[in-house]
Length: 624
Image (cartoon, rainbow, N blue to C red; front, side):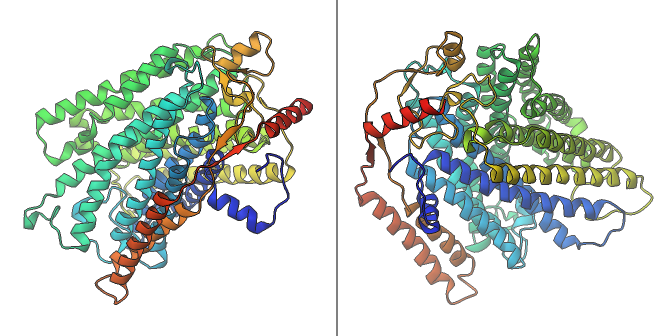
């Protein structure tokens, strides 16, 4: 395999992408898949806001509205935000620690295809006329009585996609622990790597409860179990505990990587070392720990009693402290810095007040008596969108502009990037700020329409106009991506000029084996240190040029996941059709056969010869 671009036919090009285990290509596929579902979830959001723009609207029925709000929330959390973040983790984190790839390239591919097939499984429900309708949290009292197969699509689709997320989390953990370059101690790791590490540890502990809950729900609905049926000795509230023991850490699984991205941006575009690096690391660890201590603040109204409510209220307020440490450190990084207002920096500056507003309303809801008043109103909708959109989505858009040149070798247009920012940012605040007041004025969540004369008309119209602004921003971004890809103007290794970490020292896009020589890390912000000492390459090699071992690609992950996909349909339709049970057995057998083939097949990879590496080094020197 040569690193020189070869002209390939479409078939071999497609085969290369379908079988790839290269972390950079898998990162791109995560971005493509997550981007597709992000647009899909955005279309669902637009339908919601068009329906609610005026009172007594009959654009869609109540039943369809329930399906759309369920699919919007489920899609955005599980199929858009997480996979896009996994895309950046895959593409950038191994480069930041000086690794050739992730620890388990085959499992990396398997996790990707489980996400894609799980997402497709969930969305096929639209074509079957049976989309899930019990809300994205799928509370058991609604879920076990929901007619049709909608909730079954939810439970099985998320089982498949969630398994992929768990695989990815384990993979990132092992990669960071075992594959750091010489000299890359834990306290020299970039903040994005640290947040990837903590978020992956949270995935390891948070996703098994969700998996268990989904198994219980599947068995209740499809196999006659009674985990959640109170009439048969079950308990519907147990689902809420199981779900939120996953669900609240999930908020931090989504926000911590965004914190890492913004930490990189503030440092690069302030041309300063991140202020208080050590305190940032410990704040990240503390957020990860406390994230598991607060789940029942989602359940203040279920009757846990004043003692439990007080404990979870205190824990909720405590978790604001390490987040506050981060906010002040970012502000102090900018203080006295030589700030360059690029598109990523605009997102970073806009993120601080947006996320603080989401955090403050979270602390408000941490007070149980106030939460009794605000629960199930539009105040809650406003709060979690300020956290997820004002934090995670702004982080994703910032990372798209920051890392696009590193991943694709071309620079997104800065003017169009700023147009996207202003449309999205203004639209975001228009959409969700007013919803706080809607909540105070008593508008309940999850209602498909409302009567005239309740004082909600103007606020809902403003909210819907804001959603249109956000949509325009995303359309401008898609246009920017297409135009940049068509023009295909190559960029330098460090297109922003002030890169501080290892990924900015290698070519854009990187060679398939990443580093011609394993780098030696001599301190925090190692590339910045090298440049300050006159080493323009940004890297001091730790080893001489030598053959590099690389893994072979494999089609087995797709086939393995296809078996799960087929088995899911078999399980759902096994009682009402003659083909359901055979399909279930076939799908599971297919998956196990693929696992056996993978286990028994010797695949020792291949070596990139030293001569090819020297050629690449020579070509790179010529390019400079």
